[in-house]
Amino acid sequence: MEGVLRELLSLRSVDFDSFDIGIPESPFKPIGLATAVPDFGIHSRRTFIWHAPKEILPITRSELDRFEMDAPDGFHLILSERATHSDCDSLDGTKFQIVSPKQISQWIGSAVLSGELVASAVLEDSDDVESNDVSTYSNEGEMQVLSSKIDIDSWTASRGIEGFSSSPILLEALIWRVSGDLHGPSGSSEKGEWTILEDPWSQRLSIIGESESMQRSPKIRSIEPPNGNWLSVDKLKMEISKIVNERRRGDSGEVSISGTVRSMLLEKWVLDIHMAMIEHYRIFIPGWLINLEADKILHGRNGRLYDLVSLK
Image: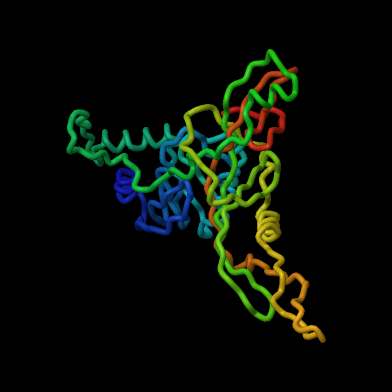
């Protein structure tokens, strides 16, 4: 699909130029840069053009907010094969414009009818034919689910709860990859890398160890938290610093009559958050939708119940 979009943009837009400034782990893939895209009402604005490949989940406002953190300054046109969540209705039109899957189909269809593009049938039985719709990037990070830390049967038995219905769901969260320098006393420093889970349901960050198992996400219903549960950029950086910073026993010592005594003072090692590389991708936490007196969400890692928000 990206190849088709690039070809049509080169025909229909002004000063179109392909570019490759992809954002690591971003759901949006770079297509090109243009000074005008008249078909979508953009006539004299330097525009970055992106492609949102097909996926089971819609584009959300929180996803766009996090994309904006890493994207270059300017106006962004997103050609999407994904639906758009209702929380994007109030999107700032001076920053983003999303072209829906229906609009893309009509746009490509009109180009085929006008003869600008040539359509051909896909030979399903041929092993030698490769489809141009195959993405050239891995989207696996966005479709992974963390392992559950609770068993619903044990959780139910320990609380003496019986006779309720339950169905598995996925709870949206984020993984942050952080790499940077820890600065210690006397100008010393060392490099480090951390994998951090942002759980918007419990509204906390936690470091994920290398032994943490992740699995391919099943195609079941998913649910995202209220937008206000996500950390702001400033709050996120502050919380990352808190959990990454370390206190270590110092190596200095002082001489006494009986010999050298190692200092018991703890030295603070602090992450240089301003120079750190921070990347993120979406991940899911297992959970259950259960019906007690009202529908509730059972978190599969902390065992807590949360109020139901809109299902996707």
